[in-house]
Length: 443
Image (tube, rainbow, N blue to C red; front, top):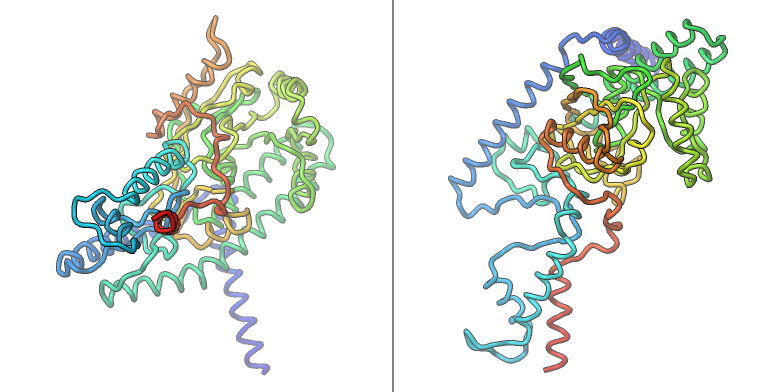
């Protein structure tokens, strides 16, 4: 028993020594030992090999079924040609129908297709995960894992062990340390007088904590055009894919956050942060008062020493393929707008948060069991409101610039057309069977 305890203690010491020496300390000072980049390069090679192996397996065995992706939207389509689907509908009829003869059930096929087109339209598709060209060896991105080769199965199994038994505990530990340090550090800095030293220490603590949290997600972030970084007294606006957008941006600079005051753990973090830095938190009643919100934000921007405000004008998360309509309130405040485009690489993990499908805990667990978070961030040149330009036109101009730079689709629909939860998911097969049952009853 003593030997077991000694071995456990030794392993824990080695674990924390490696984590602190090779991950935390370099992260705190914005340094990298190159381990993450090597890890990403190995992943790219493995995913390329897996893709080629799957393609070769289907070429050698044409009868092998193609792995079906998980259904992400409201419509669960079964696939197949029109003749096959209509033949499936006719199969439920009690009386035989000769080829080419009209059947009442045929109309239900076109009725269902019309409903699918209405429900699963271009806007609704922006609230489901981005489809991958090839499988990235994550179980949740493949509905039916079909056996291709023994080597591919072994690689997939090793990946599960590495992600859940090595990376996940490491990421959880780093996330806990980063959040705890954020609460403790900002609380201690809050006791200092309002001077330059306090502001400097506050920015240092924020940067360190966010960088630790970013390492906890195995985030590889490439920042472009750093000369356009948001400056104090300005407003930073960005497209919104995930709650970790804040961690991605704050990893390279400090921002004043804007949002609603919360209770519980989130409330503790907010109260500690606001002690050291002038973040803008609103009560629920204030959020409904548009003039009060605008007034407080305008006062923050007027103080040129204050950190730039970070705002996501879409108001909801979009699936990393598009930019939805920007709400004009952020562009009525005045001051300089610093646009930022964020684009995630979906091959290594799905960063999109479908809040209608997953709660925050489930989403974070999915993030921490993915391969990695690889993202590009572009700082665009600052933009100001032109003479005679209203807030709506200004918001659309900024949105178009972000979409163009990030390679995203520029959409003119508001993000609050978000579909409801999975409870209303339309299953095509069940719909067909119910329709046929009605037809049989009428017959």
